[in-house]
Structure formats: structure tokens, C-alpha cells
Image 1 (cartoon, rainbow, N blue to C red):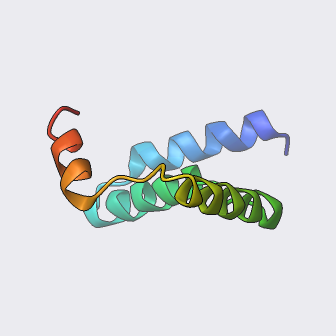
Image 2 (cartoon, rainbow, N blue to C red):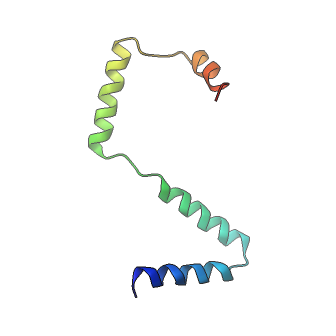
Length: 72
């Protein structure tokens, strides 16, 4: 069965589901699949950049972050 046929089968299956709990579980699963974890190389690079930023004083206090977040 090719990918297109499998997608159509899934759509037909979803249409027939009447249990909201099952739909909620499927939605949670889809939400989890959207978040792509960082590779080890990316994590190390981000950590090194964070350390450099900290050493250069590129930081914000908790109060500054809270103030900034009110404008989002």
C-alpha cells in the first residue's frame, strides 16, 4: 500500500471515530510529533553560545523577562 492510500485509510478511520477521548489522544500524539528534538551537536552549540552570552553580560533578570512577556 502506497503512502497516499495509507493517508486516505487514516482519514476514513478518523471520520468514523465517535469517542472524544480517542480524538484527544490522537491530537496529543500529533502535537508531540511536531516538536523535533535538537541533535547533540545543536545542544552543545547552543550551550556554548549561552555561556558566551552570559560572560558578555547578555542576560536579563526574571523581572525584565516578566515585563517583556506582558507585551507579547
